[in-house]
Amino acid sequence: MTNPVIDHLGSRRSVKADNLTDPGPDQQQLETILRIASRVPDHKKLTPWRFIVIAGSERAALGERLAHITAENEPEASDVRLEIERNRFLRSPVTIAVVSHTIYHPAVPEWEQILSAGAACMNLVHAAHALGFAAHWLTEWYTYDESARHAVGLNPKERIAGFIHIGTAKEPPQERDRPDLDTIVSYYDSTAQ
Ligand SMILES: Cc1cc2nc3c(=O)[nH]c(=O)nc-3n(C[C@H](O)[C@H](O)[C@H](O)COP(=O)(O)O)c2cc1C
Figure 1 (cartoon, helix red, strand yellow):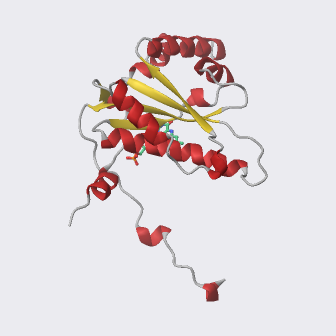
Figure 2: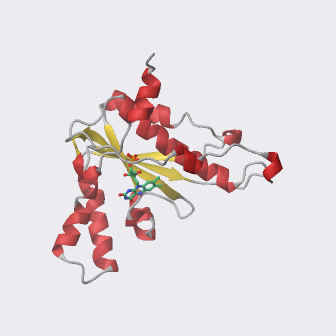
């Protein structure tokens, strides 16, 4: 008996941002994707994440900022390199930055709040796939560069959990080897501890 949800989970593959094209999600689909992304386990309802949608002409504007930061960080950067930075967000119709922020909470260690942001990223990817789109969860250098994080709109206490590029796959992705369950699963045995 087939189960469409299991089929969905079992067939999803990332598609490289370079292999994404139009169409991307329309506004209604985008809101569906964002709603699913916000429906993740979140201990004590701290909502330790938020989303920034990078779409339309803002994709080129942010790329221009990245090129500028690159030129400042690396004065010897070639024109080809600067062009790559300019085009970072033009690779896909839309990108959603998942922003992680944590607070002190006596019952919710920071680790759990960060994990919840990762779960939001994964839900974004799954929701995009379920609507027939493809996605790529990237971080790349600008996740870890303070000026770039500022350009994206983060405050100094926030971090990027991922940039989720979403679009239509130019071609179907090839299968990727997955770990053999034998290598990652064990059954707890109290006599062995
Ligand atoms: C937090 C995180 C950051 C990632 N950043 C990058 C990245 O910057 N560049 C990249 O090529 N893949 C990156 N990946 C890997 C891809 O998102 C993806 O896992 C990989 O292409 C395999 O695709 P799959 O979803 O089909 O297994 C990252 C994954 C995670 C979880």
